[in-house]
Length: 77
Image 1 (cartoon, rainbow, N blue to C red):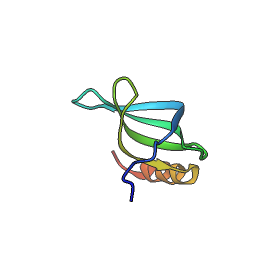
Image 2 (spheres, one colour; image 1 turned 30 degrees about the vertical axis):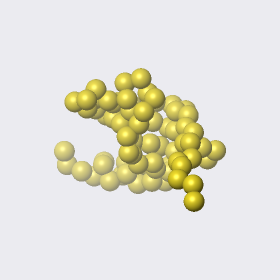
Image 3 (cartoon, rainbow, N blue to C red; image 1 turned 90 degrees about the vertical axis):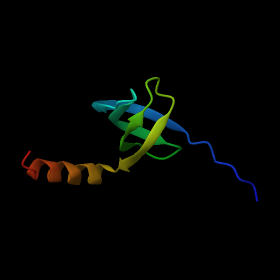
Image 4 (cartoon, one colour; image 1 turned 120 degrees about the horizontal axis):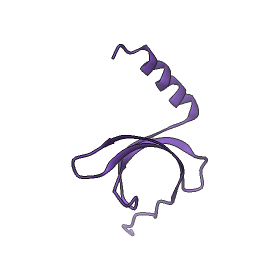
């Protein structure tokens, strides 16, 4: 059995916003990202300063980002 990781292809279709800069200099961002050959999704994750490396993150469909927006709008911050 071969042990290898398939290459993950991605394209940042649109940078939507910077959420934070981490102490190690990476940026936590909300972007619209196309992963492999799938339709783009909303994506929250950390990116290295040069944008070539990424941390673990979460991807959300349009319906999920709308639900998240509704939840955030109800929060008393």
